[in-house]
Length: 80
Image 1 (cartoon, helix red, strand yellow):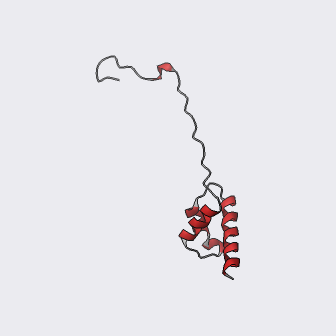
Image 2 (cartoon, one colour):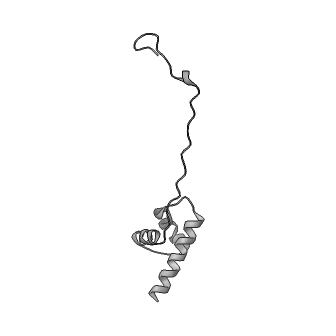
Image 3 (cartoon, helix red, strand yellow):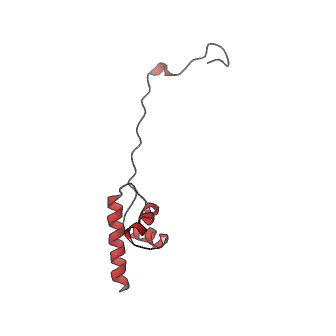
């Protein structure tokens, strides 16, 4: 009985992880009661790691400089 329940919990965590792509285990833990599951956050963390689920990190955008002269050059000391 325990293993069947664990498999159902693992499937539910995977379903939530693929539904909420940018979520980590804490977000999944917060959604578990809404899916009618009461589960410890450390168990969610262990299942998250064992299932090979990770946070999909968003790549940072590179900022372009407006030109070489975009920096202000002071005419006198302490003046910009």
